[in-house]
Amino acid sequence: MEVKVMKNILGENEKIAEDNRKFFRDKKVFVLNLMGSPGSGKTTLLEKTLARLTKEIKVAVIEGDLFTARDAERIEKQGVPVVQINTAGGCHLDAAMVQRAAESLDLDKINLLIVENVGNLVCPAEFDIGENMKAVVLSITEGDDKPLKYPLIFKESAVCVLNKIDLLTFTNFNLEQAREDLITIHPQIEIFETSATKDIGIYNWCEFIIDKLVSSSY
Ligand SMILES: Nc1nc2c(ncn2[C@@H]2O[C@H](COP(=O)(O)OP(=O)(O)OP(=O)(O)O)[C@@H](O)[C@H]2O)c(=O)[nH]1
Ligand SMILES: [Mg+2]
Image (cartoon, rainbow, N blue to C red):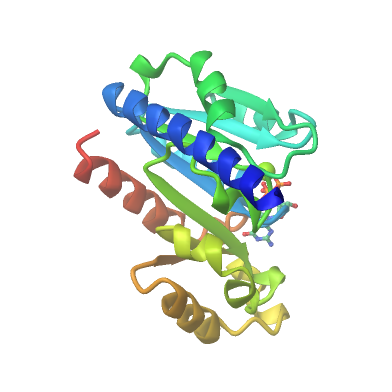
């Protein structure tokens, strides 16, 4: 019974996600779904990404959180339009939430919409929101076993950002092992090493996003 209900929920979500994708395509807005565990550094990476990208690209942000507008307040300081979604306990964003949030953005004025999903390494991977690309942030302090333990999110994501690389020497995180496991799970995955606080690797990550926009003719 539970399985059937879950299937219906996912089926309904899939329809709205397809509507979103078509809507964003018509508006020529590329949508990036940024996922990862709580505290992996999504908002900090986003702050650094916006500081660089907004010189060249018009960006808006949707922030997903259980409660509070803290991340949206941080992003607002970057001078980009931002909408906060509070899921009131829900562990992921779904396509309907993103559809509603997008209504309060002027999409004719932007080329890139970045959605910071709720901090979670499991649920967001199961819900298509109508994005063009999923990216997962894995921080060094979470441990190198996470790709094998939570494979779906790494399988679904075109990109994995290994953040907090500045902390590598203070941990037992095995970078080679993590890279090997990521490639085993998803052979085409792009891997970036960043420190969002020390501004390491941000340039390459941003260039990658720009290339994606250009190659998708947005
Ligand atoms: N050392 C180090 N700390 C970082 C880095 N990136 C983020 N942090 C710190 O990690 C903590 C969490 O960062 P956030 O950017 O808020 O993480 P988040 O993934 O957005 O968290 P949620 O939105 O709660 O899921 C903050 O104290 C950041 O300063 C990094 O590259 N290196
Ligand atoms: Mg955040």
